[in-house]
Length: 232
Image 1 (tube, rainbow, N blue to C red):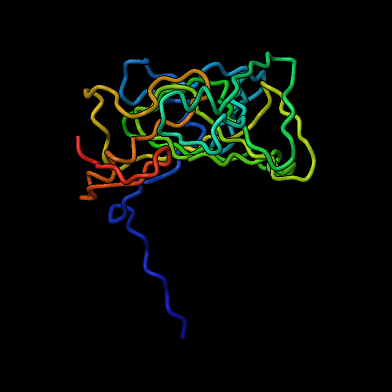
Image 2: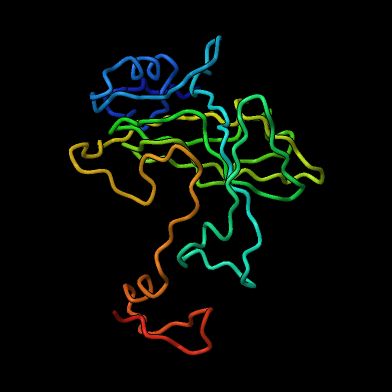
């Protein structure tokens, strides 16, 4: 005797946490820029359809931050001017290229500027065609609602040979996910990275401030042999 499957009552299920389809993405992009549900992805330079069924392709921008050895024997990203000492900024115009040595990483950014709606989060993944050349986007791929700016990409060459990056080429695909509760679009934008148009180096809190928040009253400063207080 077979057991029948009861019919699914869609009203009992919450489909809010769903991946936006190409039709929904396109509809969101047609909304006014002031609409809290509006989506901005610009420029879209493709002559053909930029959408997959559930994502949109993003291209590589033309600015890069290349790691370089600091004058000190180590890099402390919390120190002032650490970015200037640890990264070399390079501009490679469209039509040129950048070579990444084997097992090296650079910071790049998407060519597209993005504005996410107040009720949508995003995730950027390496395109499969790029990943099969052993180039990977290893940066934190999650994009919060109301984000504005180009996306900084940590691009790693995990192969045994140098690789060539061409600005303007497809680098990732953006997947958009509807949230069950919208963010408050009336609040000022906050966070370490707001509105970037080029790759940004890390903005980290000073360790003494972080440790003080969790009740630690002293710490070791890598620039000093003595213990130091975390107090003001």
